[in-house]
Image (cartoon, rainbow, N blue to C red):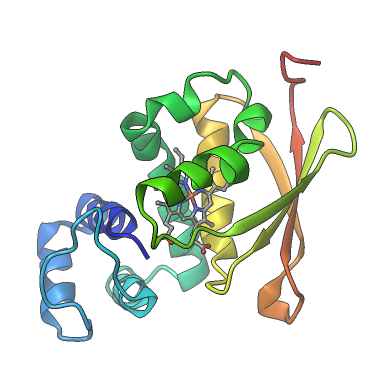
Length: 186
Ligand code: HEM
């Protein structure tokens, strides 16, 4: 996983539980990476999950909940770092439709070794968006938090249900999203 995600995780741990807790996690010796995580670098997914697991131990928050909170935390920071990805849109649905074919495509151009997840989208009607998420990392709880963060960012609540899950042995995770308002292009 790219260093930018590790940097977000450091910020998440430090803001919630203090810099000292993050330092402790690094010093407990469970990580393969010895140096600092830098944004353009790539690091083992196992290190990300090791930091998350230590966060679970230190906070008492269960793993799925921690991943969800982390996802929600990431969106405002990503939006500030990459305003061109968010400001053209006024509605979360219009933004979410760009994640696969614009945002993560640009991420791949920026960092060749990035392996963003794959998405297949369907719009059964103007108030819904079905997102199929596919990734060997199976981070669907992180994905849930990102969806919530997008709702916060656009000040438009998103109701979602996860209808399929790779953690239950299915091929993909599927999220069925319903929006409170119609997007402006309808
Ligand atoms: C400004 C917005 C965004 C940027 C710049 C961005 C960028 C990135 C980057 C750099 C990674 C790491 C990929 C890697 O290291 O291989 C990543 C991972 C991921 N992104 Fe995005 N992303 C954005 C928004 C979103 C949104 C809105 C969603 C879904 C609702 C999403 C879903 C994911 C997921 C689930 C991962 C974890 C990796 C995995 O599951 O395999 N991203 N993103």
